[in-house]
Length: 277
Length: 279
Image 1: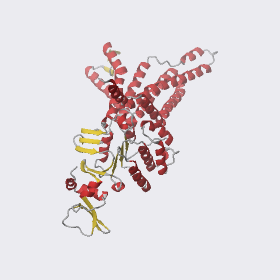
Image 2 (image 1 turned 90 degrees about the vertical axis):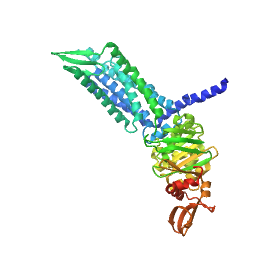
Image 3 (image 1 turned 45 degrees about the horizontal axis):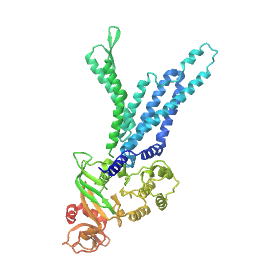
Image 4 (image 1 turned 60 degrees about the vertical axis):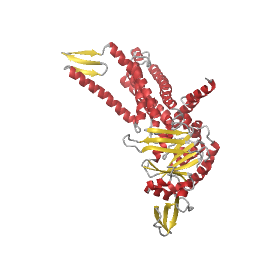
């Protein structure tokens, strides 16, 4: 077999799937074409996080405020950005120009993912750490070391670490919600951000409702039921839990943390490839 | 070359708009795609560009399958939709972001077109009127020098001088490698421009013929009284009598009137179809 024609065909084929030069051009185009949608949205989220943080820390305390603002900033930013980057392929009348832009579906999809996972996520983490560290340090410096409660107040404000227990839920939630939004923005041509939010709410409450109904049909003394977690029963004056077995629980955990986001991201690629306008 | 083989397409799988459509479009021609509103013109164009996928059958555009939307294919084709969308950028920034995707883009030519269209080159695109935005996109599309240029209702929203400019320009850019397809329901806009006419109605291909063939087989004339022996496909009262379209039995030379042709074809589709063997 002659190598040269084979390599030429291979080059043409691969060039039609991914070209670094074209990908970088696409990334530049996507980010700078509608800067209010990318930069504007990111800065808006950051501004809201800052406002919320500064105004809530003295009401709820530092720890709670940090968890709430970090969660809201990361999820809201990721959600809206995901709705924007691939939403342009489905919205009218931008869709036809986005879909017919000379770049492969893989590059277009990868561009969306890059903006969310490699640009927004690290950018938000850096911003949050700087903001958090600055405000905590300012607070520490404002305290009077001669007061009796100095140490207590000092210890009440600590910089949020990104490997604490809550992050095990927040990061998977971020990956899942961005995955859902990427798929949803390609399924719904109009107001996808609202439609996906409603759909998520319907699935969430639907899962809780169905789970509660099933648990209720099995137990007379049901108190509460969380899907894929536990059922709480009231026996006499005590509460007892029936929890998911360890194996099943870890399987659910792995599914939500790794499998579901990957499935959603792949689904968004397939949907983009098959998108008609 | 664009080859459409046994194309079936419908927005609803149970109700097909196109059934087994066969059509070949040759390079070096300007095609006028005519049809009423909702006749399926945009649907056909979207199938050619790969924005819609056929239910069955095949489309090949210069060897590419549009459905795959490969970059090599998209680089060679430019589609101007009826409603254009421009980002809120300056023209310079727009070029900076978009021209890397079109290797044959000619910047000098683009600025010449903008100058002809009286669009300032230092203006923000979002501040242009809808008509001006369309003119800008047309100028960009023409300067992209793609092998296939598809325009869906390009004259909608254009003023009279711009329509005339567009006609002249399209006539000047066609070469033996290029295919230009212009879809419109305003048939007068295509006068003296197109080489071949395609008429579709409700997914049916009513006519696909060259202007030369049409002039050979149909006669467009004005008469004071219709001859009862000749079949009149279309007649319209005019200042001088009746403008009619008849079978060209006497091999008369007449100028094709696209509007009358369109009316004749949409009213007497089957009769006209039989006159053109290549449909």
